[in-house]
Length: 137
Image (cartoon, rainbow, N blue to C red):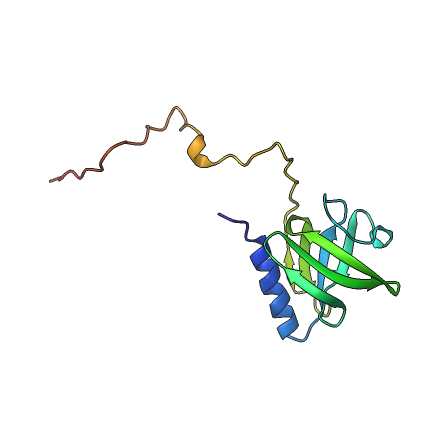
């Protein structure tokens, strides 16, 4: 299954905006491919105001969030991979969600699927061929 994180980020963003609150994202600024102004990060994290009034050209998809924002009056283009988002919440009341830290996959790493893993020794092998029913009285 696909990660639920991008769907939750988009849903929570919409929910926060619909309730007239200011959405903020907590981002791991040291995650690979993150493009944020490093001078504003602290302890490897940065909080981004992503309200419609604060950003331009906001785009959220399953891979990343990108937008244009101003830091100290200077415009910046930001790119935030979904896995680098540690949380999204409303500034006014703190309601939102925090996510687990994800480690980035290296290019040579592959996600191992359950179909490629042989069953453990204590588990009977899966039957092959046609399924059959047996009448038990």
